[in-house]
Image 1 (cartoon, protein in one colour):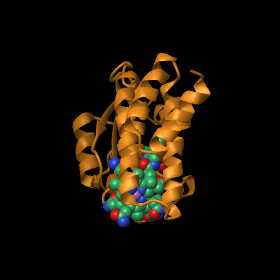
Image 2 (cartoon, protein in one colour):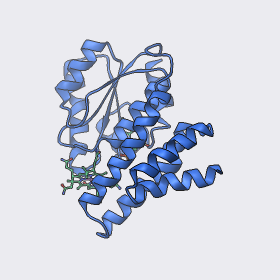
Image 3 (cartoon, helix red, strand yellow):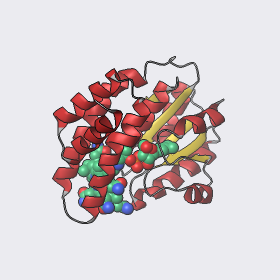
Image 4 (tube, protein in one colour):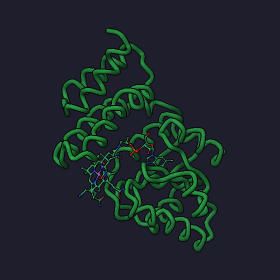
Length: 211
Ligand code: B12
C-alpha cells in the first residue's frame, strides 16, 4: 500500500471514528517504516483538524468529537512503544500537563510521546493540572522544563498563573506552552520561556532549554 494511501486512511479513520481502521492503518504505517511523527502530524492529526472544523460549523456534536478523539487515542497507544523506545532519561526530565480547568489532552499526549521518543523522561500530570501540581512534580523529579497545554481561550489564563507561580516559588524552571489558542505572542506577553505550535517542534524547543 502506498504511503499516501496509508496517511489518507489514518485521516479518514479519525474523521469517521473508525477505531479498527485507525489501528490497522497505524500498524501498516509502522510496517512500512513511516515515521511516527508523520503518522501523527500528516495522518491522524489531519483527521482531528477536520473534526474540529466540522464541530465549529455545528455539523457534528460533542459525542462525535469524543468518538474521534477515542479513535486517535487508540492509534497513539500503538505508537507509544515505538515513540518511547528511546534512551530513557538521558536528556533530562520534563513535566507535562494540561493546565487547570482544561480537560483536553490529546495534543498534550502527542507531545509526551514525542518527547519520550526523543529520549526525555516525561512526568505526565494528565489534564486539569494545577500550578502547584506542576511545581511539586518538578521538585520531586528535578525537572528543568514545565510544559502546559491549553485548548480553550478561558484556560490560557492558567498558563499565566503557572508562570507567576514559578516566579514566586523562585524555582529554576522554564515554562513552555502550546495548544490551539496559544501563540508565540501570548507566550511573550505572559513571560513564558518557549512556545511550539506542534508536537514535532517541541523536541527542539525542549532540547534548547534543557540542554
Ligand atoms: C477533541 C476535542 C474535545 C474532546 C477532548 C478529548 C480529550 N481526551 O482530549 C472533548 C469532547 C472531551 C472536548 C470537550 C470540550 N471541549 Co473541546 N475540542 C476538541 C477539538 C475538536 C480537538 C482538540 C484536539 O484534540 N486536537 C488535536 C491535537 C493533536 O491538537 P492540539 O491539541 O492543538 O495539540 C497540538 C499543538 O497544539 C501542540 N501542543 C498541544 N499542547 C501543547 C503543550 C506544549 C507545552 C507545547 C509546546 C505544544 C503543545 O502540539 C500538539 C500536537 O501537534 C477542539 C477543536 C480544535 N480545533 O482544536 C475542541 C475545542 C478545543 N473544544 C472546545 C470546547 C468549548 C470544549 C468544551 C467546553 C465543550 C463543552 N461544551 O463541554 C469541553 C471542555 C471542558 C473542559 N473543562 O475542558 C472549544 C474551545 C473554544 C475556546 N476557544 O475556548 C474548541 C476549540 C471547539 C470549538 N470551536 O468550540 N473537546
